[in-house]
Each structure stands twice: as C-alpha cells, then as structure tokens.
Image 1 (cartoon, rainbow, N blue to C red):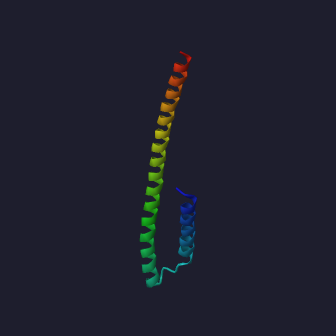
Image 2 (cartoon, rainbow, N blue to C red):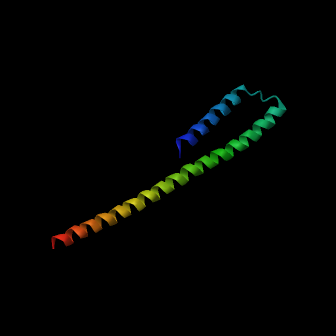
Image 3 (cartoon, one colour):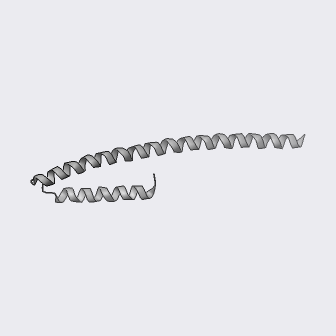
Length: 86
C-alpha cells in the first residue's frame, strides 16, 4: 500500500479521534451525523483491509513469478555455458 494512502488514512483517523473527544453526544443532530460518519468510517476500514490484503497477495504472486523466471534464466544460462564447453 502506498505511503500516501497510509498517510491520508492516518490523518483522517486522527481528525476522527479528535472530533470524538470534542463531540457532545447529547445533541441529537450531532449524534445522527456521528452515526453516519461511523458507518462511512467502517466502510473505509474495510476497504483499507482489502487493499492491504490484495497488495500482500499480489506481492506474493509477483515474487513467486520473479523467482520462477530467475530460475528459468539461471537454468538456461547454465545450459548455454555447458554447451560452449563442449
């Protein structure tokens, strides 16, 4: 996951936490707005988890593919080196 995305997420988290401290839950309109915000926050957290998970899976697949290709190249180089000696 990109540093920019992580930074933006953390900035939002900080602002959310600050507002939670300041929030007077006795005011009904603020309570409703807070509940809407919390629903949005939950969706954002779920998306962030998916991004992390998808990134880790993709990275693992890319690493496996690169290792396989390097193995193929190493094998071909070895074969070429052996055939030159003959």
